[in-house]
Image 1 (tube, protein in one colour):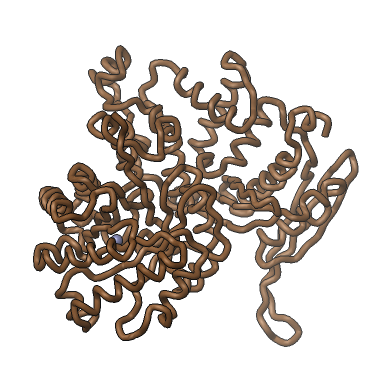
Image 2: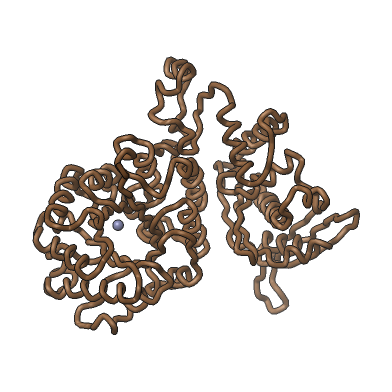
Amino acid sequence: MSREKIYLFDTTLRDGQQTAGVDFSVEDKIAIAGMLDKFGIDYVEGGYPGANPTDTAFFEQNRMKKASFVAFGMTKRAGVSASNDPGLSSLVQSNSDAVCFVAKSWDYHVDVALGISNEENLECIRSSVERTVAAGKEAMVDCEHFFDGYKANSEYALACAKTALDAGARWVVLCDTNGGTQTEEVREIVTAVIAAGIPGDQLGIHAHNDTGLAVANTLAAVEAGARQIQGTLNGIGERCGNANLVVLIPNLVLKPRWNKRFCTSIDEEKLTELTRLSHAFDELLNRSPDPQMPYVGASSFATKAGIHASALMKDPKTYEHVEPESVGNTRKVMVSDQGGKSNFINELTRRGIKVSKSSPKLDTLIAIVKEHEASGYAYEAADASFELLARRTLGTLPQFFKVESFRVMVERRFDANGVLKTISEAIVRVEIDGERHISVAEGHGPVNALDIALRKDLGKFQQEIEDLELCDYKVRILNGGTEAITRVLIESRDDSGERWWTVGVSDNIIDASFQALMDSINYKLIKNRTSIEELSSS
Ligand SMILES: [Zn+2]
């Protein structure tokens, strides 16, 4: 029997943006959209093009390889024709594959919030969907407060859904906007909606976690027949968050209750990237991953010594519901380090680095990575630094240049006109092929000055790094008090469009930044040399 597909819809960049303390830059959005696309999510909702400058810029720049890129916004206003509504026009004309409209489906809200008639609201849904479809885009309609609306006036809630589908919408999404609906109610209402003639393969579910039931409610909707699930990375979102895709996906892929009947775009092989995706996203948000998050947390497969541990040593299945490797996580009570080793080899192979399992250099590398991670490095978020460390340890990283020394000065003083100024200056001494290059630069702050000086004169490599650009810089203080350790993450890119992250850790923020800058330049030089032969002849 062929399995039905469950479509995965990510709204991290739209609903997730509502999370307290989360404010994505255009760069963040590009990076996250790229991660979701690469992972294999079907729909990536980007935000509100035309409604705010960040999203407008993001939509202009964004390119998806596989995922459908979705613009979100309101249906047209009442009293204006669909062709004359500026909000609707910016959605339809945006650089997107699909448009997701939010529409009222609770008559009470139509009356109180919109102040229009029920029929006018249906007309807004109909004409907005029709214009979108006529423009060659996929249309979907998020029915806001659907479950509460259905309880109050099921006939009208259904009329909203039917109107959307009759107008040509691919999906109607049932939203539990306040997040208070209980799992049994979701199951009953989705079943009733399908019985009323709305096809399940055109139904989506959008659950919020206000009662801790978002994942359960989503699965209940799938059980009842819905075939699109909406959620966010790590469950971020307003108030208590949205349904967590990082939890939903492994349930659907690994649990026989689901995988016997359903498939998703994420197969078992892709799923092994889940832990890395979840952690990289947290690093981008500059927050520590939740150690107890199902499937991907650092403690998800950790067992303390005792009866459990000894049983686990005999057979891991005794205390694990799935194998940690299936989601790219690791067991914390290790029978041997074989599991860790295979993970490493996979990671290296992915980057084109060959090493044999019995190589003593591999053991050295694993030990160094463990030691570095214990002292604050985050390689999951800084893949370029990981690759450089691996190449350095395995002996395939040439020394392009050597920084003999650097000095950074920050001076705050009044200038000749009595204006207070802060001046940052850096001096860098670099050795290339036995020749010394000294560069001096001023910058906006000490790190910027150091960056400019470092890249001012790299001798024969200068031309190669011309298109290197730093696009993001994140600082995290890892432990409080006077001995605070600083971690710096830097994102770089070049004209090829590739982006890479590097990391530095030190009790001195300038030194941490220096390490990350050095890695960024070295990675740029490495990526220009594709084969090992080229590397060793440099
Ligand atoms: Zn929502």
